Amino acid sequence: MPIARPAAPVTLEGFELRVLQIPLVSPFTTSFGTETVREVIIARALTADGDGWGEIVTGASPLYSSEYTQGAWDVAMRWLMPALLDRHTLAPEAVAEVLTPFVGHRMAKAGLELAVLDAALRAQGRPLGEYLGAVHDRVPSGVSVGIQRDPAAMVDAVRGYLDEGYVRIKIKIKPGRDIADTAAVRHAFGGIPLQVDANSAYTLADIDTLAELDRFDLLLIEQPLQEDDLVDHATLARRLKTPVCLDESIVSEKAAVDALALGAASIINIKAGRIGGYLEAVRIHDLCEGEGIPVWCGGMVETGIGRAANAALAALPGFTLPGDVSGSNRFYVRDIVTEPAVLEDGHVRVPTGPGIGVEIDPVALDDFTVLLETVRR
Ligand code: OSB
Ligand code: MG
Image (cartoon, rainbow, N blue to C red; front, side, top):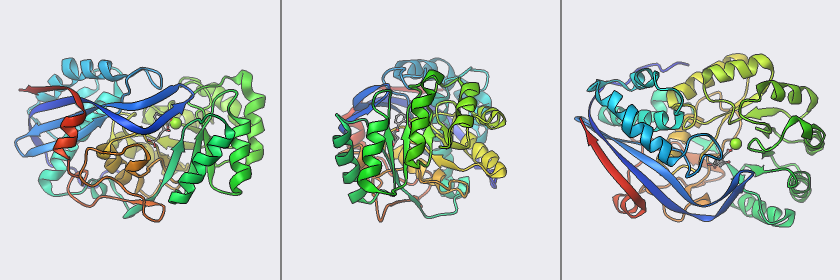
C-alpha cells in the first residue's frame, strides 16, 4: 500500500557528509572485483527538530554501477544538498521531487532522502517500519556469499553460514566459476534454498552455460546480463527454466514496469539505496504486489544505518523471498551503530525505535571517517 500517513515536514538547517572506510571481516569477491574495505558515505540531516541519518551506498569505484564515492560526494555537495537546503522546510515525501531535475545519481539521492526521513520520523517518534507499511516484526535472513578460491572453499564458506542459521544462500558467480561452484553447493547441502548472482557478467553468447544452471533447481538467477540489456534478459528468460531476477537493471519504478512488460524478469530485487530511496522502493513493491511478482530486499553491504532501514523495508507484505538482510557480523567486526543487527533463528529483527530505530556509535563513526564536511544554509 502507498504510504498511509506522511511524515511531518522538518526545518532543514544543514547536512553533514562523511566518507567512511570500514574493514570487512573477509574479502568479498564478485564478478566485478574484490573488496576488503567498505567505503561508504554517511549523511546526517541537521534539522531544527533533531538529526537524521542516511547512507549513500556507492562504492569506491564505478564497477557495480556508474556511481562511486567521489562522484556521489561531488553531486551531493554541489547540487543535491543545496537544492534541498534551498527549501528550508521540507517533507521527506518531497525530497525526490526536489531532486528530480538532477539526472541519475540515485544512490546519492537515496542517502539524502533517508537522512531527512529519519530526522522527520524521529521527531514524531514514529518507526520507519510502521511508516513504510511493515507487517512483520522480524524478517528471514539470506546471505550473499562471495566467489571463493575454488568450489571446495565455496562449500566451506556456505557451510559456515548455514551453521549460523541463514535460511537462504546466494552465491556469486562469473564465467568460469559458475556450474562447478553451483553443483558443489547443491551436492553438499541437498535442497537448501539456493540462488546465484552474476552481477552482469554474461552475454547472450553464454546462453547455453546459463541454461545448464537449470538442473540445480535454483530459486532464481540474479542479473546475468548488463544493466541495460532488458530485451536480452527477456530472450534469456524465455529459454531458462530458472526464474530471472533483476537487480542492477531495476533503477526505478519505471524500469520495473518496463522489465515486467518485456518479460525480462519474473522476480525483482529491490535495493532502496540504489533506486533513489525507500519511497521509490515501496512503489516498486506495490507495483509487483499488484502483478503477483515476488520481490526481495537486496543489500549493498550496508552499515547499521542502511541495514536497519532494509530490515524495515523487507517487512512489507510483498517481500515473499528472503533478502540479503544478514547480520552485521556477516561483513563487519565493528559497526557504527550501538546495536548492530544480529541473526536470531535465521531472522533479523525490524527495529521498533523512532526513525531507522538504531543509535549511532559516535566513537566508531569517527574512527572510520576519512573525510568530513558540514554544510549549513
Ligand atoms: O549484487 O547484490 C549485489 C554487494 C555489493 C554490491 C552488489 C551486490 C552485493 C551483494 C551483497 O550481493 C548484499 C549484502 O549486502 O548482503
Ligand atoms: Mg545483485
